[in-house]
Amino acid sequence: MAFLYDTQSLFQRYLIKLFRNPTLLGTNLFTPLLFLLLFSQLLQKFSLFLPGVSGGYLAYLTPGVVVLNAMISAPLGGVSIANDLNSGFLSKMLLTQVVRPAILLGRLFTDMLVVVMQSIISLALAIALGVKISSGIPGVLLILLTVAFFELALSGIFLAIGLKTRKTETISAISGVIFFPIIFVSSSMFPVSFFPAWAQTISNYNPVSYAANVTRELVIGGLSASTVFYAYVLIGIIAIASFAATLYQFRKVIS
Amino acid sequence: MPDIITVEGLSVVYPDGTKAVSDISFGVKEGEFFGFLGPNGAGKSTTIKALTTLLRKTAGKVSVAGYDLDRSPREIRRSIGVLSQETSLDVDLTGRENLRLQGRLQQLHGKILEERIEELLKLVQLEDVGNKPAGRYSGGMRKRLDLASALIHEPKLLFLDEPTTGLDTQSRVAIWEYLEGLNKKQGITIFLTTQYLEEADRLCRQLSVIDHGQLVANGTPSELKAALGGDAITLTIEDSGLRSRAKEILKTIQGLTNISDSEGGIVAYAKNAGEIIADIVTALQASGIRPSFLSISSPTLDDVFLRQTGRRIRSDELSRRETEPFLV
Ligand SMILES: Nc1ncnc2c1ncn2[C@@H]1O[C@H](COP(=O)(O)OP(=O)(O)OP(=O)(O)O)[C@@H](O)[C@H]1O
Ligand SMILES: [Mg+2]
Image 1 (cartoon, rainbow over the protein chains, first blue to last red):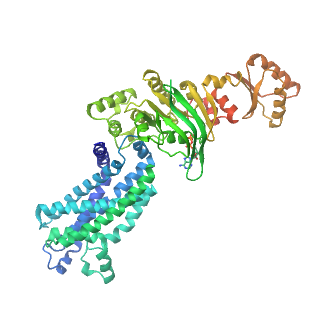
Image 2: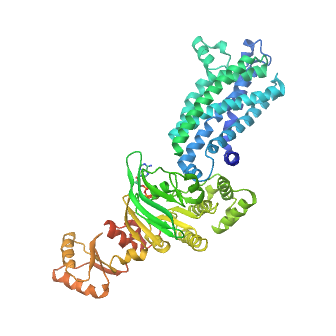
Image 3: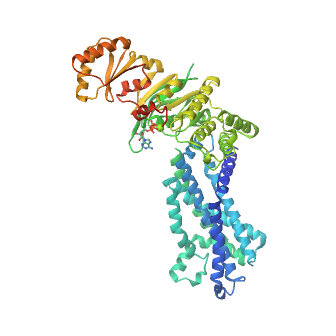
């Protein structure tokens, strides 16, 4: 009971903080929308090479942009815990009767909510531009679930880094450096068939591709159970590994 | 009254090998206003962190609020309130929201919590700015809000780590008054660390002086002062070569005790300081030594500190005290 209460209290805290920092929230929301508008216009001719895709390159791009939301929000939790560590606020929380895992869980729920809201906005823009979500409302729900799960798995990596280094700069640097290669060398933004062989190989193992492929099959059509299965297994493995690291670092910090 | 804190042989060594606290022992009685006095780096915060379960001790036996530190850290946390040295508030949240979060984490709910928030905002005189983000508060206001949040669950034991360092005179006096009220009216036991002698002198009924991780003196402020043997006589002798000779001469004077070096001169103590001062001047002049400055004052905790450690506590603060009291 206390665990739920504490998780809710901290969820509210983080949510208030996010909404009191509209610039951060705004840029996080704006980047995927910009990608969607920019690439769908600049690379319009890609549609010619995607004859099987109804809706053309815009429809192809939409899932990638939705997945992008997860990647942009994933570092937020790590930054927040590093800030709380440095400001002494984490110590202050640890001096209360809080059920300690709630400190992490509250944050994870906040970020998942943010990702879901951002993804809805991205999808809404895509729909406004003419994309049809072939799988309908249930498909949208599964898209949101997939994106939230992907964000959750990735956020564990940044939480562990934040707890270990206590530096928000490290998190920004790491996420900044890996962000573009893993986004672009995946099936999320551009058709993989355009890539040279080595990039196709990387893309085939890139988790971003898996998350994007599930979302793409839900948008364009042709959903197969195996795509969903492999994506969820892979994201699940990332989640287990990243949260093992996070919990290990968290225990070190709180003891 | 039973002891609410007992510490036996507490040592804390940091992972990098720093011995911050070495084998200290003391007790704090229930209802006490206990002071832990020491200069920068003495080990005050380290001791507080160990007693409040934040930092793992290296050795020793500690009980807080009736619970063993090793066995029942949760129970200890439930019974204590802590104001840490670095003010820790969520600057994005308003004063009320900060208190609400703290109260919820202390497992308070609903109407009881809301009433407690208003009560505390009134106590620390922040009810008018309760809906303003704490990031826009002044240093003194933040300290007061932090103090209020430490009190939200009505702890019977309060740890305060340098609650007034860096505050102006007004804020400092305000905090002193809240603390006196909490201790006298509500019977809350207070464990306070400070580097300000006047703060310890005014607030604390029992004191421990800590330096380099070790306790160097214990007692009530008046006991500690009385142990010096009377009023403080301070002589300033510019020529440092003459100082040791002057000390030898002073040692021959009856009734003068605890003769020691002080910055730029010598300090000694005497019960009948007014009478003895003529003897001092005569004896020194006979040897051709003329002190450039000579004063008699009732001993302060600074004299206690000087006596125990050979140094004055924060001489920069003391030298400024004449013109701008307390201002840091
Ligand atoms: N995390 C740490 N790792 C290593 N050494 C530390 C750490 N924190 C404090 N110390 C060292 O331990 C000693 C005691 O520090 P502490 O913070 O307890 O002093 P303090 O009495 O609170 O001083 P101040 O009045 O400046 O707050 C100092 O020598 C300090 O450098
Ligand atoms: Mg300190």
